[in-house]
Image 1: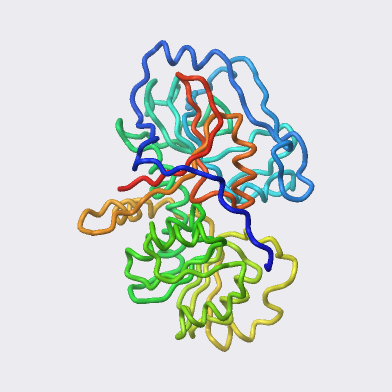
Image 2: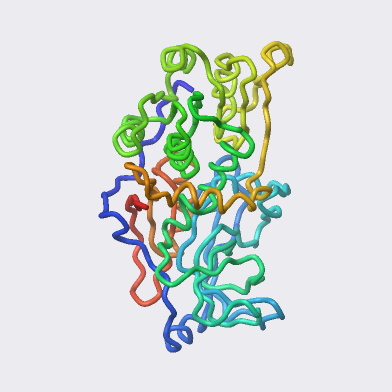
Length: 381
């Protein structure tokens, strides 16, 4: 891991919530315009190694098919991109997050949109909703898979600290990892979408947080904005840094990287430590991390893989923790914003290449000309 990581895409800091779209019921004329045509992103080529923007293609089509009972037509307003989708692109493999994505298929991400037609009893035209949406300007979706948002809800927060990435962080740390006050936890990929949530959740729970990321800008962000005391530069040898930050060892490792990170964590674990396997974002994952289990046995270490799709029931716990008002340091949603459906292929590739801070969120403007740009925003609660 000796090579340096790409710097985040140049960005400008925006005022808190400065670019956040807040749901409101749309006027009928805007709904009619939105239904006139659909643009979607499809997988056009099987990625050779890492995806590049030209592996995707934008296609236009007439208004979608007729609604079935229980479906709604949703005009997409924001999409939060997920790095885990890479494992399904042209691989023929499905995961707990969705089916394999083949040539001609449209990927999906959790997003926010506006209901423009409804055959679902619990959703009406003009309702704002959050849930899994295709990379398209509008689509027909099973209404049972969507949650209705209250008017005025902060959309960016719903895709960051209160959304899929926030729930992943909470379930991994608390439900699966059983993190306790006073314990020491190392969070890898801490400047990413899940990582930015995880460091804040762990801190609010009273844990001693160690966070790793690549590059001075990300490390400074973690220290300055998210108040992390111990940061590790992931492109340097991790073992010595861990011994300095956690001389007594780790109680919990939150692993989004795999590879050398996981090997270093195993060496640093305390007796009865836990390792939660969240993702495999590392670039050198071909070598085995563990060639025998004697270390796990001797230290009674638990290593557990999990999927956030199994833990929707703890969402109220996440919301209660995030929305507490009796704290000095508010929790923030961190996102790198892009504009327009045409920006999705490049934005997704930048996410995989580590060129962003926080979650990549793509806004799909409706009432103004589309522009492609990048910005960074933190949304306070």
